[in-house]
Length: 277
Image 1 (spheres, rainbow, N blue to C red):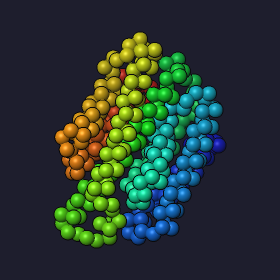
Image 2: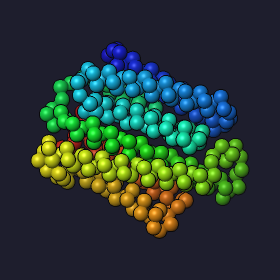
Image 3: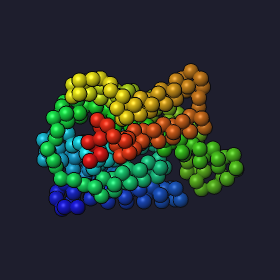
Image 4: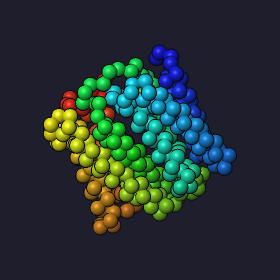
């Protein structure tokens, strides 16, 4: 990795994310206001450094820096950190970071391992719709990542209750009702962002390639993912899907998101393959 201000800022962000993740692990075994405060401050510092790196990259490239796998991973990590900070301040679920910040850190590590210098952007990426599409898509993905983390927490807490293991972890986790309600809130906000991401992507595709929808592998998997979350939201609103069923579907939905985001680019060919380079 070539040393530069950009890589220095990213490395600083990664250090803060890693320390924040470790503080989150401590939260599982020994909850205290000081540990929770330290975790949030570390993630906040990492987010600020990361945002500064994003801005620097923007200035260097003179374009929205989400045009290759390194930049895409970095941007996703930035959104994960930002959404986590927002939810942690509004929902007051201190242990949430123990389940979300590891993903932020892993994605950031991957991004740094494949860091690339600024390169000229092809004409299809020099569009107003690129940042609009990316912001909606990553905001939706980050919010739905929260539903996955909350779903995992729900399944763990339910298992502890059924097996009557009323120990340290049980006391750290929120109630099943609180987890279910917060998951629904993240779903109800994240799904519209996901929808807008697909719509703006279609508009951009029409301008860049002359067609709103070409059944490219990424477009196809985006639609599959959208239907999964649409079914989950419909089930919650009209069929009483709550608790374990909703938690499992939230996890499955996020697996589909990650395959759409990474698996399609790395394993399949198509019009969106340039983001994997």
